[in-house]
Amino acid sequence: MNKNQKIFRWVLILFTLLMIALAVQMAVNTTAPWHKKSFMKSQNRAAQ
Image (cartoon, rainbow, N blue to C red; front, side, top):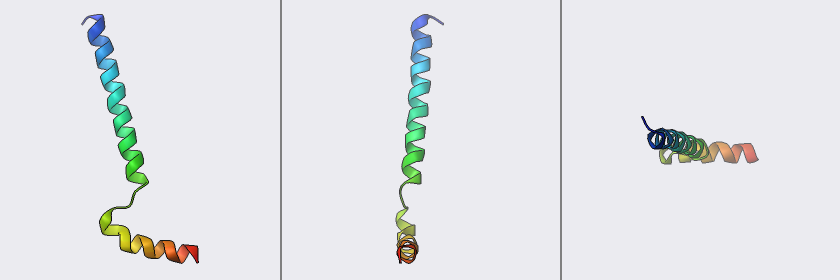
């Protein structure tokens, strides 16, 4: 494996890990559409 292939593989691995981290972060901070009603009810109770 030459130097360019090694660099490409490391960049690919880092990019993939970054995309996975972003996907997980967005999933944690959003509410699924089928859970919104119960989520909003619990948020309203917590706010009062």
